[in-house]
Amino acid sequence: MILKQGQKTSSPMTTAQIEKRLNDVGVSATAQRIAICKYILCEADHPTAEDIKNWTDLNFPKLSRATVYNTLEILVQAGLLKELKLPHTGKIVYDTNVEEHFHFLDSATGKLFDVSPEECQVTLAMPKDISVQGVEVFLRGKISAK
Image (cartoon, rainbow, N blue to C red):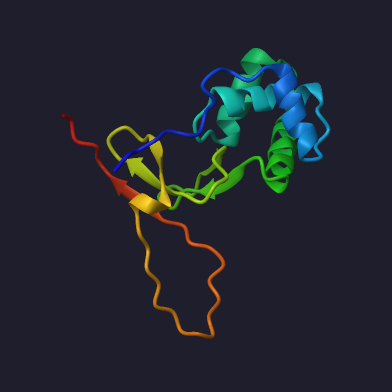
């Protein structure tokens, strides 16, 4: 199984690239949203809203908690992020990988990794009157030292 951390670009996105990405999905590219996206899309890996707020406190002073939460909601609605509620803690993390995939939590380190659907096959045998609209798989374990 190949475990990958969140989908990050090979080189950090420029402000112009972030602005274009926001505009492409119909989101106004304010300075606050660009700053938040710079962190989420280029640096963070499955961050919580609190992680994002802590980053903005250091890098974009005076950005309110409400602005962080409102921006996250807008980015999720626009399809740039997925909101993921972790079953073991109830914490909500934000995922830049919006393609269908599953998650593996390394219980030793607390790191969350993406797992492709090809690596984790799920077979459903549901009654015909049930329409499944999505499947979320959350795996937990430890990564062995090699």
